[in-house]
Image: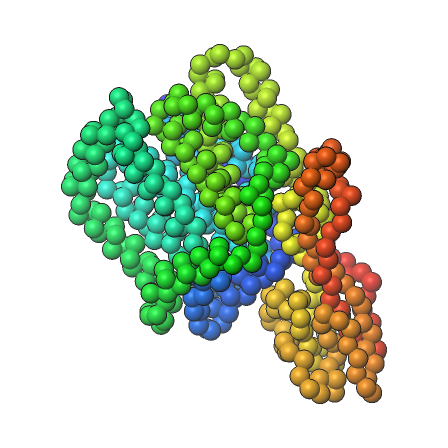
Length: 516
């Protein structure tokens, strides 16, 4: 039997990806958004109805995570398991494109995905964007598979992927729009002549549509069924079928007009320069292929890199996890370009591999520091608002309190995080009149006072954030930040208070295991 070295490489890379994505997955404190996503998934398992709300993106994450909770229980690990699994799934998708990317190319792309600090940190994060990345890459892989060998299976799989994709996040409209724009531009400007003239492309498109028309129709019905079932909460909220598109587009268009999280156009540039060395291979590739010195796939990857980076740079929702989406095509472009350099032999192979090892080592160092070494509240360009260790410790304390001691009241900024951590605890999430008569513990933004009852309050950090001065970072702090991950710039902090009746005592150490 003929050996397949690519298959052995795939096995090794999958083991590596599983270690990077799954080890210690439950330890980092849950962020504000993660707690919301985990809670929405959890209440589905308790029989409470889910109703689509565009503020929290599409329904797929909540229903799929609820299924995981039903099967394996709701824990800090299982809540993050599916995003991590989808992040790992990017590796076999790269492998499926080995004929297009080459034996070196697909492996280089996969390694950059594994070691990317952005893709790893948010591959261990309970959010929608790992689903988006997987569905985007699956769309590309299935399209390439169909072009190479037209047959029904990729058509059905593609529409299933698109059906799940539209139920994930509004990024669906951006990414699919970019893919369609590329096809339109190629046809309008006759971009691939003389190798693939416009007339031949149009003829092939017509031929495929005619040949697979019944399969496309059947696959489209699967897409519609997936969309209707998920957005209608399995037919219990039929209004969701309409609002799944109208509300989603309307809400996020409104966020562009009146942004809640704005940022400069160059927001992602410092993050790429400091933390994503793939840019130093992808940028020369972009320049090279933009001059139309490659084939159709090279031109597509160059277009997709430039277009996605431009769109997300203009979009007025500047958060580090959205860097995942311009970053993903960079890994493909870098892999494809490295394969070309190895094939042409214009540069010494040893030199090329040496440069690749240095870039990978840099990426792996950044990734390991961010995910396994840095304290949750440390300043970092790839973090947004990081929850400190205090809420997790507070949750452990409150979990151990007996109901006979009195009620637990929680209000203020710490509510969402503690809602997830105390999901099975009897807690009142308001502070009603007369609370002091029955309260054993209160968590609030400020210390509480009550006549006739004394409370001992301890101030804790809820979360931290860093709004960097980019000019100062590059001119004064660059080497300090790059080499030691330290900055002289200040970070912002949000505080909360844990208030216990005077007879209670909050332990100084709860013996929590930590990687930090």
